[in-house]
Image (cartoon, rainbow, N blue to C red; front, side, top):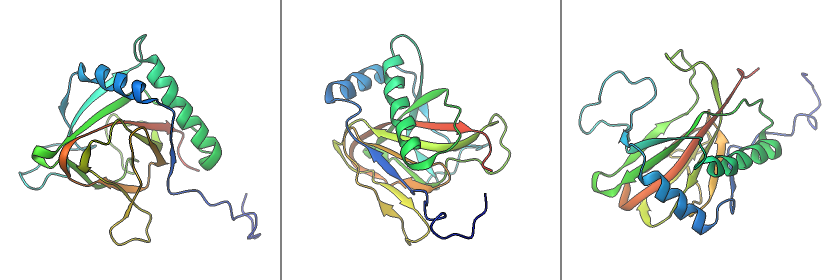
Amino acid sequence: MITNDVINRAGASHSWTFWDGAFTDEELQKTQEYCKNLNKVEATTLGATKKPEPGKEVRISEVAWLKRNSESAWIFDKMNFIIEQSNTNYYGFDLYGYDSLQYTTYFANNEGKYDWHMDSCMDTIIGIGETRKLSVTLLLDDNFEGGEFQINAGTEKYGKTLPAKKGRAIVFPSYMIHRVTPVTRGIRRSLVAWCVGPKFR
């Protein structure tokens, strides 16, 4: 409902929020051990039709896909809890869910990164039939340098660096422009989910 009452309009949505403590250190290690056995491939950008020229890559990382099964169900349950609670507390989006989790690794030896982008698809892309509405990235460890997670909320020239640490899940609307800066030491490992729902209206 459209209103002219400033007080009623004051409940602005957050550009990002975070959740700590959903996974213990042992569970984070267990998740990494499980992900090591997954089939990893070179990451591409959504809708890309050809490999970029060397030096012009938007994304340099490896990814693997986690599907829900008897071994991974507990990981999905914890991620679902983070998403549901964060959405209830801060966003109130109509959400359906997500099919899989992406395990992403960025390596210092090739300065792994993901330049400015957003997760939502505003144009028609083959194979994407639902609207990405809420994104979550869980940092599985913090034994690396660089690899900062930054969001540009439209008020910063270069974006705001979000405080990241092992076990922290950063939750944000999928239309927020964000990036991962180049990793300069070690390996950055994370789990990512994009929760979909009906079109924004």
